[in-house]
Figure (spheres, rainbow, N blue to C red):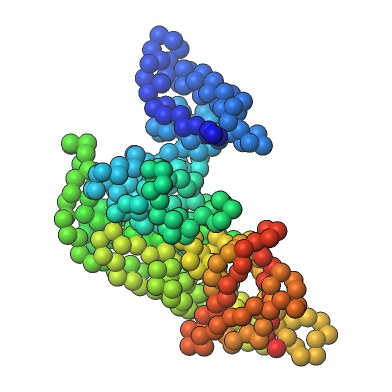
Length: 379
């Protein structure tokens, strides 16, 4: 069935306001009218299921009282190869403004497409709705499973995805040197996406995308914890998890960098989280579901390390809650003694630990009653 609607070409309404009260007046009438209709027909728990589109005029953006999602970009054009990198530039930079008013929508994409992974990574970090316009039956299920859990929910980041400070005034489409970086926030971690989107830019004379470099060079992306605005109050150290390479790295402070080389249209997502320390020297940082694009979005609760009172063995315990199923990754030193699942001391789960990197890995099963409760113990 139909459970939502997109209202398109909204910026055209004020243009026909002459003689009937003016553009702002008629925009208000139309906005009030369609929002009332949507609330009546397409709402769940009094939340309107609507995507506002072609609505970047302020007469529209400043009128919304019920709907909260607004398209941030031009369309996804599956047959225009040159459009895909520009699409990501548009949504990220437009979200700087639109994200202060609405939840930016980064548009649909095809999961079976030459740029499918590029688009999927952008949606994972965009904090936006995730939806595809695949031909029925023509899906890349392995890619979609990195965005969507079995119950249909997504691991959506908490904020609109926006460019990092150091690329705000870079021309990431045609200066030939800059990697576009986008940041977002999860529960207690951040996520930074690095995207090589050089080679195509908007031509303001022809009003078309223009290929300015057929073969952009390999670029180096330097990512740091303080690229995430909500981590700038943290001094460090931090742990950085690279999604595509499954690599974990300790960053001593907020300015410490992890680097990666990217070919044209390549990307990487970095989950960055502060490291906790116990008085006895245990280092710990839960990261999230390693095979999901927004790894840190799986965590729903994180407790501070603690030592139970009266425990003669002076055990150190870490507790957290995470969505599942999937491969959970964390950083810790030294290797823990045991890992328990869902509060049952009898339900130990196997794990692996790489002493050289601190990478702790174990698998969470399908959820039975919401997020899993996990306890990691050092004795």
